[in-house]
Length: 247
Image 1: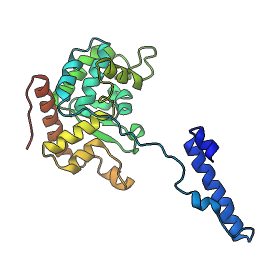
Image 2: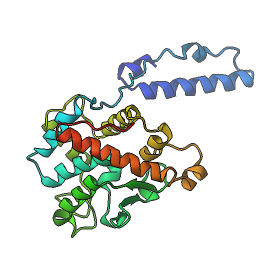
Image 3: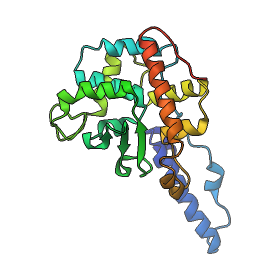
Image 4: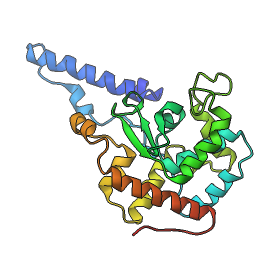
């Protein structure tokens, strides 16, 4: 086990320990042994330190937004980053978006269950700034099925690394991650006074009951519309140098 651990194959070492322990437990039950030496080694294998995904702080957000607006890379990447901030969906949910998922009359983005982490349809209310980004994006990619097609193959979505490299290119090597926008939005919305249940529902976090998750996919929708509008106003205010807060 120490030899395996020395190769830094820590998960393999843990499985080997479990298998050895299982053999000895079987041996004890069948009268072939009286002692399980593997039991004494529980907790002795090194584990990898958990590294939480980096997120922008509230103070970093205004400068980041200004850099997004001034981004000189591909325009679809710039617009993707703006949508990411305005909707705080997961990277895969954004990159896999299709134009048919957007209802401009109802100002909604309905992400189908097949593309959601918990396999439940998710509704993203679209405030005016998000709709403006989509209007700007449509002449660039509206002829394709995908909202953000891959430049090499428009039948495939933009790569996850494309967004991450753009963030790095703007100078955010430590505090900027694609997933981190969700944590940033959650923190600020809590500070703005929105109810935790409303925030959690909009983040589409894991629901313990699949039946409840399916039934409540539109739960708090009116409150979520209000919250997403307030969030958009807040973001627009940061770009313009002001901060709007919702009590």
